[in-house]
Image (cartoon, rainbow, N blue to C red):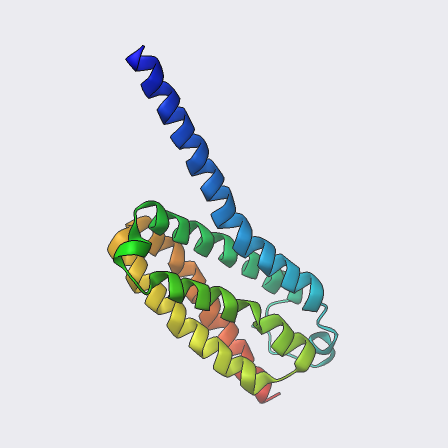
Length: 166
C-alpha cells in the first residue's frame, strides 16, 4: 500500500515537472516566434549589400528561436534546482534578457534604428552574461546552455554595430 502511494506521488511529481518544463520552454519560444512573425519580414535588411559574414534572415530567425529554447531550458533547470530563490536577481536578469532579445527584430527590421539596436544588444549581452554567472552557481548544465546564447547575442551585437556603418 505504501509502495503504491509512493509510486503515485512520484508520478504526480513527474507530471508537474514535465508541465513546468513545457511552460518554461514554450513561453520564451512562443514570445520569440510571435515577434518574428510580426516584425521579421526584413524588407530593408534584404535591400542593402551586406558583408559575407552576415547571416541570411531565415538563419537569424532560426538561431534566435534556438537561443530562446536554450535559455528557457537553462532557466527551467535553475528554477528546478531552487536557484531563483537563492540567486535573488537571477529571475530579474532572465526576464530582462528575454525582453531585450525580443526587441532586436522590431528595432532593426522595422525601425532601422541601428544605434538603438547596438545599445540594446550590448545591454542584452551584459544581462545574459550576468544570467550565465548566476546560472553557473546553481546548475552547470544551465551554464553550458547559456554559452551558445551568449555567442548569439555577441553576433547580433556585431551585426547591429556594422549596420550603423553601411
